Amino acid sequence: MRAVELRGRGGRLKVLVPDGLDVVDVKALDELYGPQGPRRPDFALLLRGKDRRYLVIIEHTGRPNRDDLERLDHFVEEFRRRGSTGYVVIKVLHHAGLRSGKALLVRMARRAHVELSKCSDTLNLEGLMRRGLQR
Image 1 (cartoon, rainbow, N blue to C red):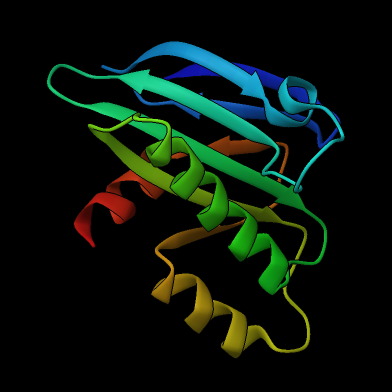
Image 2 (cartoon, one colour):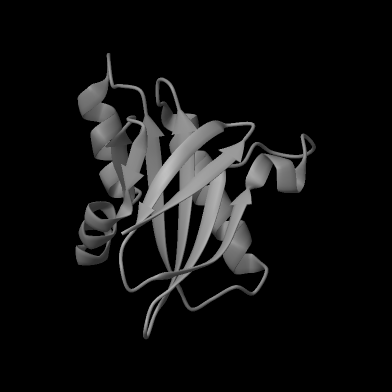
């Protein structure tokens, strides 16, 4: 596995990319789009494997809520509307912890095909991608 450091207004995050995948591009979306318009997820990674391309969208948040899930969905819709097709999309909500409403948020995330990952210093994409691809 290879570590990629992400930095932006959403903070810093180290992501472990599985072997066999090349990092094509890494974007801090707040810096790319600026403060105008709707809020966007914090980071996007474009990865390429032998026969697939992946778009990994990461929302890095403290206490997750419905707006975070909607932000991920809206970005993916916008990405596809611009003609970017042929990507396997992995949506990740990287959070500090779930408190009240945990069961509801987990159900909503599953329905929206969003992978929940509790914050640590490092986000390991291998397990998240495997689960996301099995849905």
